[in-house]
Amino acid sequence: MGRYFHSDIDIKSPWHQVLAAFWQRYPNPYSAHVLTEDVLYREVTPNNLLLSRRLLTKTNRLPGWAERVFPAHMARAVYVLEDSIVDPHTHTLTIKTWNLNHNTLMTVVERCLFEEDHSRPLWTKMRREAWISSAVYGLARPIQEFGLARFKSNQAKAMKGLEYALSKIQGEALMHLSFQPSEVHLHGDQGESSEKHKPLQPQAPPTSTQKPKQYV
Image (cartoon, rainbow, N blue to C red):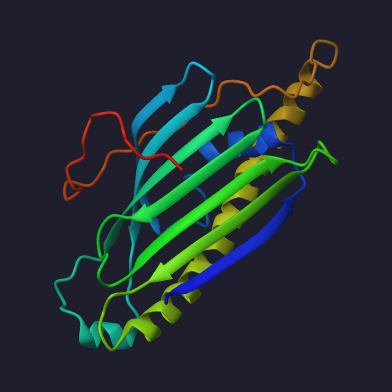
């Protein structure tokens, strides 16, 4: 049947800052398991939605009991595809991620929604869901339990990484205010955000340059 995880978190930062922090969260002190990130596709639709597809490479260390069961030459890198939609009208960011390799061993599908808290405009609500499954006969249950524990651990690190990126953005904003107090006006609109592009490892799987057919 697989395992299901969900959490709801209130972030004490406005949505436009959380959006900027999302794009700038790598690298950070809590993301040692994230090796590379690369933008595969990006488009602004006629109704001003920002569609993005990125490829992330993460480490995949197996537990001790699994290393005795599975071949030693099994790749330890996991390729994760990330689709996202930014809606500036509703102030929402929707992300879906899933692993491209090791699908028989374990598949993890994650959906995350960041949206402005309309009752508290300076806060952002985040809802995270994940579905974890394994197709290994006889070992599916322990693999899924391990996957759930690993997912919880990684998401705790992800939140710390997001908070780290937020603190940098807010620190820069305060510094800017201190230098130009009479010229700065804060607005709720999101400015143009930047994202670091990092080279993929040579063993990365080939990807298509065609327009993606799936978004969240």
